[in-house]
Image (cartoon, rainbow, N blue to C red; front, side, top):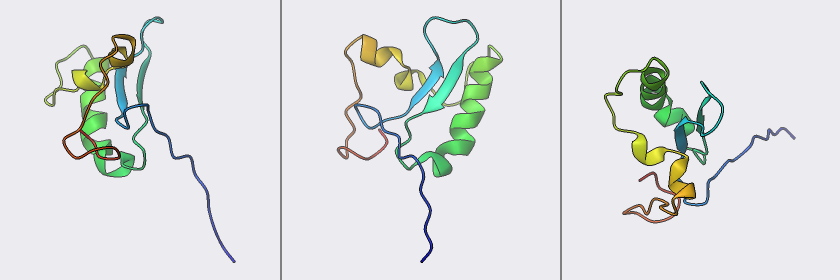
Length: 85
């Protein structure tokens, strides 16, 4: 018998958190992709790299910011829980 395990990270609204972390300077994250990270990695990685460099990302990712939870504005996808909005 073979097998493997790995973390299945989710956020309260089942959408990733991508962007600058509130508080410490220069800390950026891309987490909570709930199993969709591999297919989204190229675009999210490029967008996050742009933010780190102080540039505007080609893809607007501000909706995935950590602050949406602090502001009480979680995302609500058109396709329900488990789909990326």
